[in-house]
Amino acid sequence: MAIQKSSSIRNLLQSLRAASFSSMIANDHRFTSHAYSSATTQPSGYCGDDEDADVNWDKLGFGLTQTDYMYVMSCCKDQSFLKGRLCRYANIELSPSAGVLNYGQGVYEGMKANRTQDGRILLFRADQNAGRMRHGAERMCMPSPSIDQFIDAVKETVSANKRWIPPPGKGSLYVRPMLLGTGPILGLAPAPEYTFLVYVSPVGYYFKEGTAPLNLYIEEEYVRASPGGAGGVKSITNYAPVMKAIAKAKDRGFSDVLYLDAINKKYLEEVSSCNIFIVKGNVISTPATNGTILEGVTRKSIIEIAKDHGYQVEERPVAVDELVDADEVFCTGTAVGVALVGSITYRNKRIEFRSEGRLVCQQLYSTLVGLQTGRIEDKKGWTLEIN
Image (cartoon, rainbow, N blue to C red; front, top):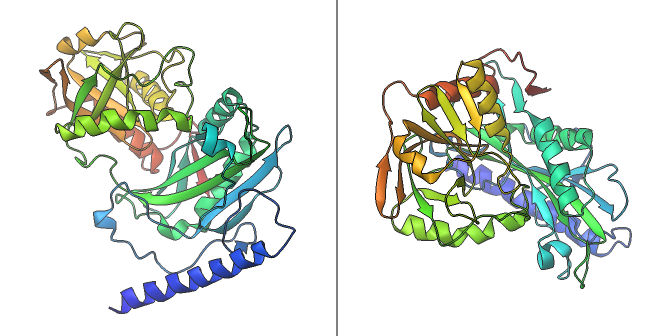
């Protein structure tokens, strides 16, 4: 009861501070941005509240837990991002004619921060996410933060919310950088103003199955992306269209959907939110990124780790018919990590894969997590420690 009361009082105080700042903005002509946070600002580098987060780490799933701070930075079209700021996590205000609301002009990233056994905080390959956002922003006609600006913003946000990072082995702090066209625009054109923001949330397993094997369904009616589109970048427009297929699959008891190419309906592309790999003997194959498949950071890392372990890795078109002969199948992504696939159903035929014994994906996953959490020495320069 005392803990609940303390938590309620803390939330009330934060709400009062947020309301006060919102009122201040509304009456101050200096705040001209079309997207702003209704929250109290703090000096750069502020490290958040000292008390422990009120979270049951043993029941942590992949859902939103409101944390303390987010990072916001804005700029106008044809200009560069300058200095951003930390502010209390809160709603943002947008014009009804904001480019992101009317035309979906936005990209985002997904990253994780992990706490090591000796108390350090590590980010994993943040430069890759920063570079991918810049690539996506160019495709969507948006200015983007520099690599350094992106990484500094992520570091500040994670540091300010460090009390929300789960203990070792209990989960990660999921980091969501977003770049949005927040300026008002009526005609179909790039927005006049852009907002880069970063928020975080502690998370556990992405799939409800946890570490249990996934059961995927191959979708033939709907496609995730088509040649010449934006499937190869992390545009916000890529995700809402797959929700119908996911809902249909989950209603039938499947974990997620595996999509085929839009032209031939013959080659594997990717799962709704992750890349796919198949294993046959010592050969690991994954669909080549050809503009319709997202170049996942975890995918890229697993490919290199697999080669280090002596596997032959092929990036090529993978026909759906090859699933019949596969020994193992697994998915990779920031949110999912490395997830074993137990079966794939295609045209009402269920194809099952090895899910017990010595598994390739478990070997690769163990190395990946070891690097991400500091249990394995990072000789590749992939991790970044946050002081």
